[in-house]
Length: 249
Image (cartoon, rainbow, N blue to C red):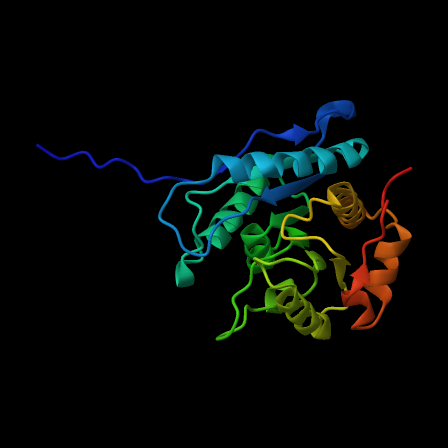
C-alpha cells in the first residue's frame, strides 16, 4: 500500500480588504502587507503578527478606495526567515504571482513590517512590483549585506523608529544609502523617540504608508514631506523626520 504524504504548508493571501467598491468593481492596484516574522524558526505562521498587520491593510485600502485599491495580508508558510532559505521572501514572491493571477496586469506595492520589511525589499524584483514599503525592517548585522539591485526602478519608502532596540535603525539607513546610489526614488523617514513597533506614532506611520502607496500605484501627488524626501539628496532624504500629526486633517 502506498503511503500518503501530507502536503506541506503553503502561503496564502488573507481576505481582501477594499475594492471592488468602485463602479464596475475594477481593481486598479494591489498592496500586499507582509507581517513580522523571526530570523530563525521552525514554527508555523504567527496569528498575532497577521492580526497586527490587518489595520495597516485597512488604512491603505481605505485611502485608495476611489482608485480600486485592494489589500491583502500575506499568510506565510511559517514565521522564520531561516538563513539562505529566505522563506518569507519566497512567500512574498508567491504572493505577487498570486495577485497577478487574480487581478491581472495591475501594479503591486509590497508593504512589510519588521522581518516582513526585509521580505518586501528582497522580493521587489518581481516585474509587477512598482513600489516597496519597509517598516522597521530587520536586517542582518555584519557579514554579507542584503542586495539592493532588485530595487532599481521601484519607489521605496523605509520608516524606522530611532529608539528601536530589536532592529537597528542604522542598518536600514545604510541599506537605503546603498539603494539611493542606483535609484533616486528612495526615501527614509525617522520616527524620533519611538521603538520597534512605532506605536507612539502609529497613526502618522499608517498615514505615511497610505499616502506613499496611493501616490506610487496611481500617480497621485504625494504629501509635501514625502515629495521632499524623495527629491532630497542623501543623507537628507534618508533621515527625514516624520512630523507629529502627519496625515491628520
